[in-house]
Length: 80
Image (cartoon, rainbow, N blue to C red; front, top):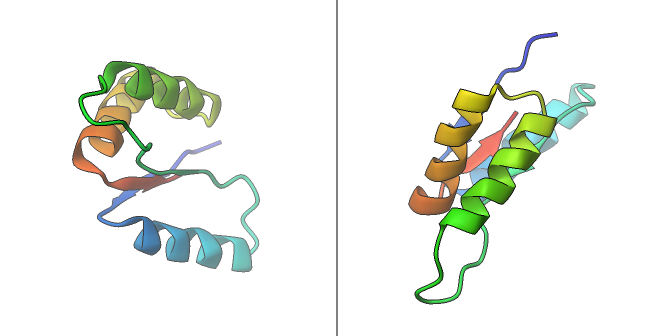
């Protein structure tokens, strides 16, 4: 099995890509979007939660760390 992931600048673009993959018959597709954080809330718990979910979606641990931080801190979305 090969896992292919791509970051998108907006959730809307990520959802369009996710929809297109579904339309083309791909079944094991995951989307990770920025979590809603309260003002001043630490990003660490959200990053860890996304990291754990990404590992379950077959993203390698080191890659999941980087992707989770990008999603939480930069507000991008990931489709894998």
